[in-house]
Picture 1 (tube, rainbow, N blue to C red):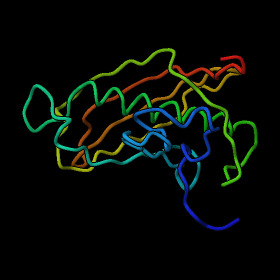
Picture 2 (picture 1 turned 60 degrees about the vertical axis):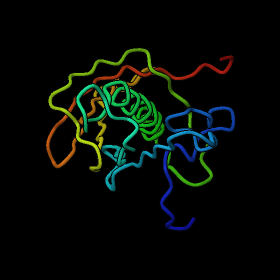
Picture 3 (picture 1 turned 45 degrees about the vertical axis):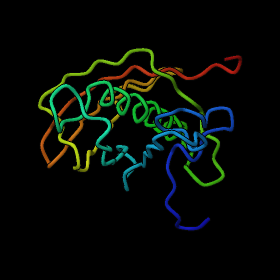
Picture 4 (picture 1 turned 30 degrees about the horizontal axis):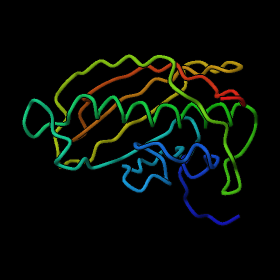
Length: 159
């Protein structure tokens, strides 16, 4: 294995690579990338939102876009945390189990500015058989902008 850095989304199985927000195979998508931290205790995504995603407050990120970023990063993080919990390593040959959102709660703290790096950090709160609860924080200009709590569930084989 090489030391190449690859995202959690890069390990999705073929049928799960088409999400608009994070799917690597969606040509018109955003291609959000989530990466495990060096110690594997958190997952991090960074993005500079395009100006077209401004919201009702000019020069600030649209709330629906914030929700989408939490949604995509949270489910990728849940997949990684469960994978790691099973004692498995993430490699370029991994086809990771896929998770979907069952519940997403967001607390908007401050407007999120455009043309700035937005950083989302996810940490596991609980890892069960099919459910992972993820805590997330969104920062811009090193200030907390929003927090989210997600309940993510593993995709069943027949989905």
